[in-house]
Image (tube, rainbow, N blue to C red):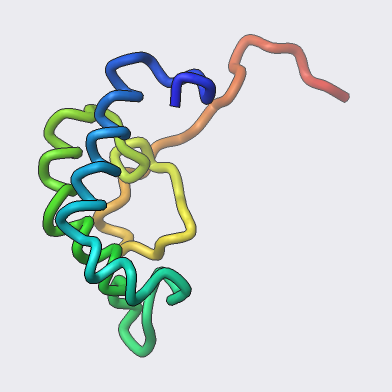
Amino acid sequence: YLSLSYTEACSRIWLYDGLYDARACARDCAGSLDDPYNLPPDCALNPCLQCDEDQAGPIFQRFAGRTRRRSGIESAIQRPCNTVARVRQVACPFAPPLV
């Protein structure tokens, strides 16, 4: 994660999250590695992601600070709209236009 420009503290929580998932969710994840993230008809999370959400999610959210959902960043995982912050993203507000 350091190579992705995450801070050391942020890299550490992502590492711990993955290690915890590997232990707590191995059974659920081994059986659903190729499953879509969300399952029809109600877009429920697949068993691996649901395990992560239930087991590691609360710890990660407590220590990670900014998460994709808190930052309004969409991901491939479909989430209820009321769980994703509505944030206006302005990438470079002081940069001149490219065109």
